[in-house]
Image (cartoon, rainbow, N blue to C red; front, side):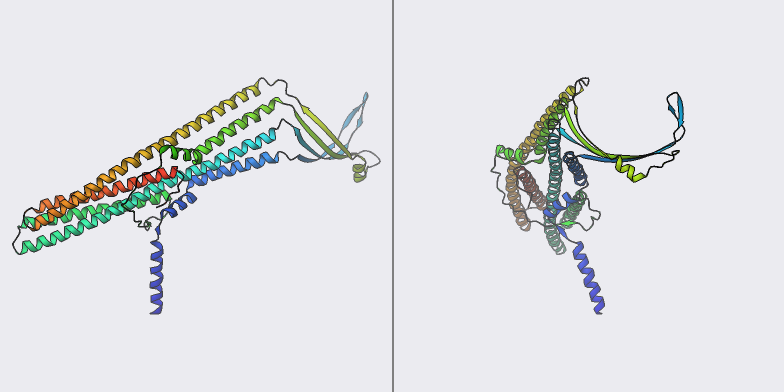
Length: 437
């Protein structure tokens, strides 16, 4: 028996674990960590990091070694005749060269690559922000649908009470059979509305699980967050939000970094107009043996005797390369203009998004206030209809209409509340306030 209880408790704990409810913060954190688009851009960032390491390593000298062996057989010319020349030779060399001067090309390349690294990091942050906003919107949609379920459940309870009362009054003969039929029909309609609301919750949870890219979604659920009906208007102006957004939004920062990268690339390209000075040094030796000679040379002593060193400095002065460098500089300047236009485009997008969010905040707040007033009026109308029906002054049809109007008004309040909440969260997000509930 003890083993049975252990198994039951174990299964119960597994069920509780499977029914974990996700918070908005958990959803956002999970999405930005596991989203494939984020992962793909992180790989792109790693490539830029490698490019930066390559650019810095160009300061180091290049060192190379070579070893060669040659065997030849046959006659070789000697004056007007020839001589047998069977020969084996071996050589080994070690050399290094380093760039001494190129008008700062290495330093400018490093600076350009650093801006590319910055831009790629901002690209990752932009994707994370986009995903976070999608998660927040779908999360709030799920909470809205859950609230509509509660409204529908209350409507079903009221309809059930009305149907029970109509059943009693019909049985005792105080009301006609049509009253009971209409009460049952009203209850059936409310149950249908409840089922539709429950399906909408499942649909929104499924959509949220898809955004999170979860493999298992059937047991997925979110926390039941209580959202207050006491909403306050947004106090920050559009200009204040825009100032913060221009300073902090990663898509704007990425565009600024790409302008700096394009300008740095122009400077890199201009270095091709200047001379390049390279220093080199090397050591080497060789072994040479005539195979048909009487005296065979010993390998290591000959290597010691033939050991040599060399050092040199070379200057490469560009004179004419068909005007290609000049054209490349012009192309780099065009890329600068493209990057500047992209920045203005990103700022325009941010400005439009902020203005739309501000408009939605103001509009949704007014809609919310109107919806609250409508809810109060329809609740009062429902109370009067109930009392009048009990007193026999109105019909059950009037009560059903009043109850439907009240349920619709409650749904409108919930819709307006969550629409306002999302638009406010979006505006605060551009103002630098993290997403939260």
